[in-house]
Amino acid sequence: MSRFIEISLKRASVTLLIALALVAGGVYATLDINQELTPDLEFPIVTVITQAPGAAAEDVADEVTIPLESAIGSVDGLRSMNTVSADNVSIIVTQFDFGHDMMRAEQQISSGVAGTSLGEVAGTPNVSRLNLNQTLPVVQFSLSGDLEIPELERIAQQQIEPEIRAISDVQNVDVLGGLTRQVAIRFDPDELRDRGQTPEQISNVLQANNISAPAGDIGNAGESRPVRVLSAFTSIEEIESMVI
Image 1: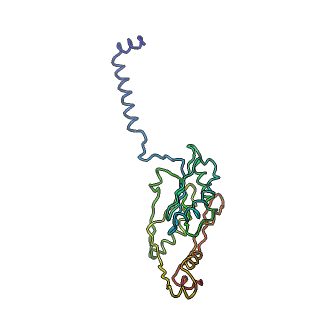
Image 2 (image 1 turned 180 degrees about the horizontal axis):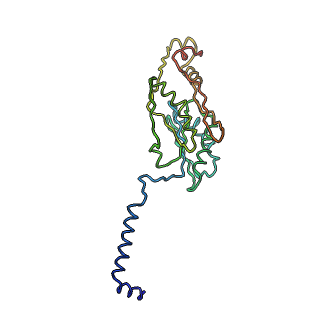
Image 3 (image 1 turned 90 degrees about the vertical axis):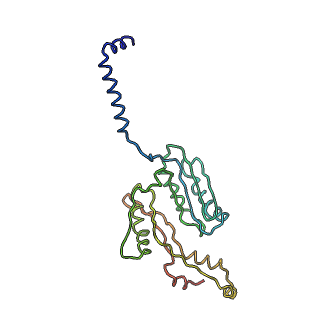
């Protein structure tokens, strides 16, 4: 060490140049280093959120949460599962160990959920991994034309969305900006009493004949495409002609 110090003192100019080169290299490396505002950090968590409009918390627990728990409980590598059953919604949070293959875990949970029979009030469960980049869409595009907004929305949901979901590594697709048509049905108490029917009976018949549910996937040439069963009302006339 003393020999090194002696040489450094004798050749002060060379030592100064070396020190300046090290400082310049450090400044250049600091300014040129790749940085991300939101790094691609994935947590070993998969959530399953199911909407159940109009259902009480007890019904959500019995008809939605418990069946989904049974379907998800056998997934490989599952560490813990927490559930919340509230009015109108069921939330299931599954946790795995860090390093677990989360894409495979999400696929297993999606398969289990798709094969589960839920109550009539439940919508389609939304299965997604927890990722910091999920809040920022990677690609956005708009659909326009001479058609009415409901027709554009139908094309986006039934034609474009399935094609995008079938692309490898696409995690989620959302269709926004459409119009949701609602029909209000009013009951005549005297007519119901004369016919011996209740509002609940009529509501159950209408729900049973207005279905849009997933029916699994179809694989072809390495691609997987989702299949849905569509039996929904498309006009007021269809509702009026329903036999109860």
